[in-house]
Length: 216
Image 1 (tube, rainbow, N blue to C red):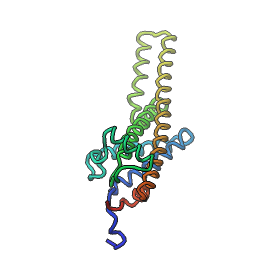
Image 2 (cartoon, rainbow, N blue to C red):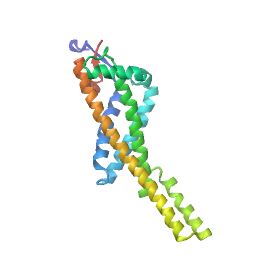
Image 3 (cartoon, rainbow, N blue to C red):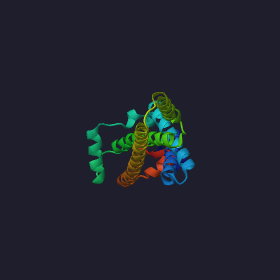
Image 4 (cartoon, rainbow, N blue to C red):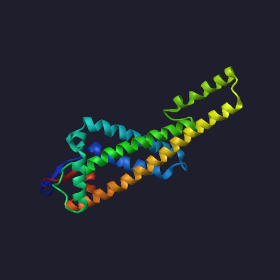
């Protein structure tokens, strides 16, 4: 170790850092493409989903600072820390995620999961593609057989198509809301990181690239 590095310690392992930045890039690509570049949008969404799954697994199996047990705190501690941070008088410095940082990790994983799942539902219902396509497509043959065997009226068929369309609209709306909520959370996360960097006089963005932070 070089003399100039003796004040630093490794906090974030390589997988955490790689997943973090891959997620940032993939989410931005997915959010900015949407229907204009559907193939790009879909594959970016797959990457986001894969990163979320890996990060959740790493939260149980990874090294100390990557585990949920290291940064999940109770509501009171989270609120107290947030209140101190906005007043630029936060409590003692955390080497790993702070209470608000840990809460943001969990909330973002939930929001991203909702965004990806609703996107897969939309893809299956509207395009007949994706991992959920088989279950979505299976509804159609059943409806057709029922129509042939029971000679359903045209009004019933119209009603069924209306129900299908209502389902599509539900998932579309949920996907849009979840994506927008995630974007708001990302903006709040960036603001929190910048604020914490100011309070503790430490470049937390750089730390997520290098994996290293100053010692206590």
